[in-house]
Image (cartoon, rainbow, N blue to C red; front, top):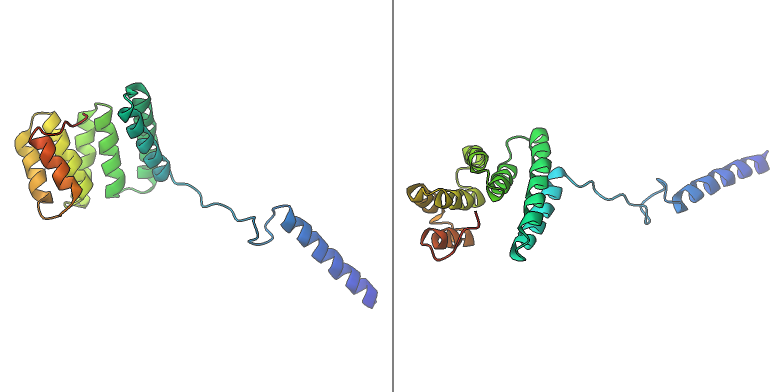
Length: 167
Protein backbone atom coordinates (compact mmCIF):
# COMPACT_ATOMS: atom_id res chain seq x y z
CA UNK A 1 0.00 0.00 0.00
CA UNK A 2 2.80 2.42 0.94
CA UNK A 3 4.68 1.54 -2.22
CA UNK A 4 1.59 2.26 -4.32
CA UNK A 5 1.27 5.79 -2.81
CA UNK A 6 4.96 6.40 -3.39
CA UNK A 7 4.60 5.31 -7.00
CA UNK A 8 1.58 7.60 -7.57
CA UNK A 9 3.34 10.60 -5.98
CA UNK A 10 6.51 9.90 -7.98
CA UNK A 11 4.53 9.63 -11.18
CA UNK A 12 2.73 12.91 -10.39
CA UNK A 13 6.05 14.69 -9.75
CA UNK A 14 7.55 13.25 -12.92
CA UNK A 15 4.61 14.42 -15.06
CA UNK A 16 4.77 17.93 -13.60
CA UNK A 17 8.54 18.12 -14.02
CA UNK A 18 8.36 17.12 -17.67
CA UNK A 19 5.65 19.70 -18.31
CA UNK A 20 7.82 22.29 -16.57
CA UNK A 21 10.95 21.45 -18.55
CA UNK A 22 8.99 21.45 -21.80
CA UNK A 23 7.98 25.03 -21.21
CA UNK A 24 4.52 24.33 -19.85
CA UNK A 25 2.86 26.20 -17.04
CA UNK A 26 5.20 24.69 -14.52
CA UNK A 27 6.49 27.90 -12.95
CA UNK A 28 8.75 30.80 -13.68
CA UNK A 29 11.98 29.12 -14.71
CA UNK A 30 12.46 30.24 -18.31
CA UNK A 31 8.82 29.64 -19.21
CA UNK A 32 7.70 33.21 -18.43
CA UNK A 33 5.24 34.52 -20.91
CA UNK A 34 6.00 37.96 -22.29
CA UNK A 35 3.53 40.71 -21.50
CA UNK A 36 1.24 41.14 -24.49
CA UNK A 37 2.12 44.17 -26.58
CA UNK A 38 -0.69 46.69 -26.90
CA UNK A 39 -1.89 48.27 -30.12
CA UNK A 40 -0.58 51.58 -28.73
CA UNK A 41 2.92 50.17 -28.22
CA UNK A 42 2.96 48.72 -31.73
CA UNK A 43 1.87 52.10 -33.12
CA UNK A 44 4.58 53.99 -31.22
CA UNK A 45 7.21 51.63 -32.65
CA UNK A 46 5.86 52.19 -36.15
CA UNK A 47 5.94 55.97 -35.67
CA UNK A 48 9.55 55.82 -34.50
CA UNK A 49 10.38 53.69 -37.52
CA UNK A 50 8.60 56.18 -39.80
CA UNK A 51 10.61 59.06 -38.34
CA UNK A 52 13.83 57.18 -39.13
CA UNK A 53 12.68 56.66 -42.71
CA UNK A 54 11.94 60.38 -42.96
CA UNK A 55 15.46 61.23 -41.83
CA UNK A 56 16.78 58.96 -44.60
CA UNK A 57 14.41 60.72 -47.04
CA UNK A 58 12.49 57.45 -47.62
CA UNK A 59 9.13 59.18 -47.59
CA UNK A 60 7.08 56.33 -49.09
CA UNK A 61 8.22 53.92 -46.38
CA UNK A 62 7.60 56.55 -43.72
CA UNK A 63 4.06 57.14 -45.01
CA UNK A 64 3.30 53.40 -44.97
CA UNK A 65 4.42 53.18 -41.35
CA UNK A 66 2.35 56.22 -40.33
CA UNK A 67 -0.71 54.70 -42.01
CA UNK A 68 -0.17 51.38 -40.24
CA UNK A 69 0.30 53.24 -36.95
CA UNK A 70 -3.06 54.95 -37.49
CA UNK A 71 -4.74 51.55 -37.79
CA UNK A 72 -3.23 50.34 -34.51
CA UNK A 73 -4.03 53.62 -32.76
CA UNK A 74 -7.66 53.48 -33.90
CA UNK A 75 -7.97 49.96 -32.48
CA UNK A 76 -6.40 51.11 -29.22
CA UNK A 77 -8.63 54.18 -29.11
CA UNK A 78 -11.72 52.03 -29.59
CA UNK A 79 -10.74 49.88 -26.63
CA UNK A 80 -9.40 52.75 -24.48
CA UNK A 81 -11.14 55.96 -25.51
CA UNK A 82 -10.36 59.25 -23.83
CA UNK A 83 -6.58 58.84 -23.74
CA UNK A 84 -4.79 62.07 -24.65
CA UNK A 85 -1.56 60.30 -25.62
CA UNK A 86 -3.37 58.08 -28.12
CA UNK A 87 -5.20 61.09 -29.55
CA UNK A 88 -1.89 62.96 -29.78
CA UNK A 89 -0.34 60.19 -31.88
CA UNK A 90 -3.49 59.90 -33.99
CA UNK A 91 -3.23 63.62 -34.72
CA UNK A 92 0.50 63.39 -35.35
CA UNK A 93 0.21 60.42 -37.74
CA UNK A 94 -2.66 61.99 -39.66
CA UNK A 95 -0.68 65.22 -39.98
CA UNK A 96 2.34 63.30 -41.26
CA UNK A 97 0.27 61.68 -44.02
CA UNK A 98 -1.16 65.06 -44.98
CA UNK A 99 -4.63 64.57 -43.50
CA UNK A 100 -4.72 67.91 -41.68
CA UNK A 101 -8.45 67.87 -41.09
CA UNK A 102 -8.40 64.63 -39.07
CA UNK A 103 -5.15 65.65 -37.40
CA UNK A 104 -6.83 68.77 -36.05
CA UNK A 105 -9.86 66.78 -34.91
CA UNK A 106 -7.71 64.34 -32.91
CA UNK A 107 -5.54 67.09 -31.46
CA UNK A 108 -8.68 69.00 -30.42
CA UNK A 109 -10.14 65.92 -28.78
CA UNK A 110 -6.88 65.40 -26.89
CA UNK A 111 -6.85 69.00 -25.71
CA UNK A 112 -10.42 68.58 -24.44
CA UNK A 113 -9.06 65.89 -22.13
CA UNK A 114 -5.76 67.54 -21.28
CA UNK A 115 -5.52 71.24 -22.26
CA UNK A 116 -1.88 71.45 -21.15
CA UNK A 117 -0.69 68.30 -22.97
CA UNK A 118 2.79 69.29 -24.09
CA UNK A 119 2.96 67.08 -27.18
CA UNK A 120 -0.46 68.00 -28.50
CA UNK A 121 0.15 71.72 -28.03
CA UNK A 122 3.46 71.53 -29.89
CA UNK A 123 2.17 69.39 -32.75
CA UNK A 124 -1.06 71.33 -33.13
CA UNK A 125 1.01 74.51 -33.23
CA UNK A 126 3.07 72.98 -36.04
CA UNK A 127 -0.14 72.04 -37.84
CA UNK A 128 -1.28 75.66 -37.58
CA UNK A 129 2.02 76.87 -39.04
CA UNK A 130 1.73 74.46 -41.98
CA UNK A 131 -1.86 75.55 -42.61
CA UNK A 132 -0.95 79.26 -42.42
CA UNK A 133 -2.68 80.04 -39.11
CA UNK A 134 0.22 81.66 -37.31
CA UNK A 135 -2.01 83.39 -34.74
CA UNK A 136 -3.36 80.00 -33.60
CA UNK A 137 0.16 78.54 -33.53
CA UNK A 138 1.19 81.35 -31.20
CA UNK A 139 -1.76 80.47 -28.93
CA UNK A 140 -0.38 76.93 -28.62
CA UNK A 141 3.07 78.38 -27.91
CA UNK A 142 1.60 80.54 -25.13
CA UNK A 143 0.20 77.41 -23.47
CA UNK A 144 3.71 75.90 -23.46
CA UNK A 145 5.42 79.12 -22.28
CA UNK A 146 5.97 78.02 -18.67
CA UNK A 147 6.67 74.33 -19.29
CA UNK A 148 10.46 74.74 -19.58
CA UNK A 149 10.43 71.96 -22.17
CA UNK A 150 11.95 71.19 -25.55
CA UNK A 151 8.49 71.26 -27.14
CA UNK A 152 8.24 75.01 -26.43
CA UNK A 153 11.63 75.65 -28.01
CA UNK A 154 10.83 73.46 -31.04
CA UNK A 155 7.51 75.16 -31.72
CA UNK A 156 9.04 78.60 -31.24
CA UNK A 157 11.68 77.83 -33.87
CA UNK A 158 9.03 76.57 -36.29
CA UNK A 159 6.91 79.69 -35.77
CA UNK A 160 9.93 81.95 -36.28
CA UNK A 161 10.77 80.10 -39.49
CA UNK A 162 14.16 79.00 -38.13
CA UNK A 163 13.16 75.38 -38.27
CA UNK A 164 10.97 73.78 -40.88
CA UNK A 165 8.05 71.67 -39.85
CA UNK A 166 7.92 68.44 -41.82
CA UNK A 167 4.21 68.71 -42.69
